[in-house]
Image (tube, rainbow, N blue to C red; front, side, top):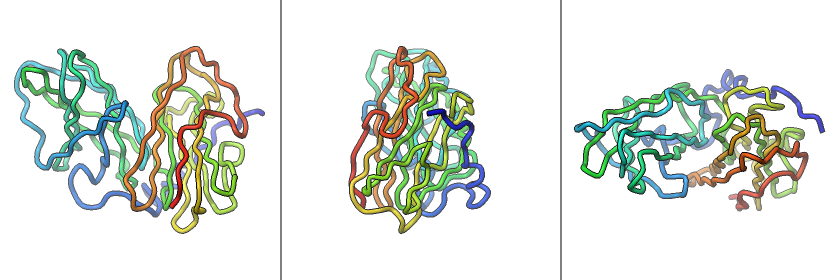
Length: 281
């Protein structure tokens, strides 16, 4: 089936409800109000600390990408590169108290960090990263500008982000066996695919997709989430992160990948890898 091109309605939602419609989001102050979780790709969680980031000292330096497109309520992968082997990474938000400390395996100067973002966010936020080496030296902070594409939230929000400019597709099968995906993007109960990125390899750089049910509309029962490598626009391996946000519950993340030689399948209904099954509520 020929893929529809350029279907993105996040901007329209932003005009109606700013960032985040209905549903969750973190309240209160501190970095946790914008950054609800930090961990490694393999699932190791970071520890949250109240107070200011540690004071830099020593010769260690660190770099991160200068900017990243993200969605409210979603997750993103960030690669940190240091001038020497590191054992810990600190992550905070500019202008907010508190930070996360993530222990990383010793013996590497490069580490990937998985960040999960609140459902209610400003249109931009600056994230701060510091790294620590085995001698206890703390790097000067490196800053990443997170540019937020607004998507809908609600009682149930399911999203996927990925790290290569490919056409990755999110498929969600609801308890009534209705499959929401690019070709059938609104369910009878109002579940909606409201962001479809890189459709037909028309690269928009957002690298996220999102399905949401507004408050009071998500059917009760079992859901399935599939991720499909629709088209390999870039000849490189892809790592993706699925984020499930259920009202009143901590977010859950699931990671997976497609190999560099996976050509994509132009998948239709039922296509893709099964990433998770979960009950709602």
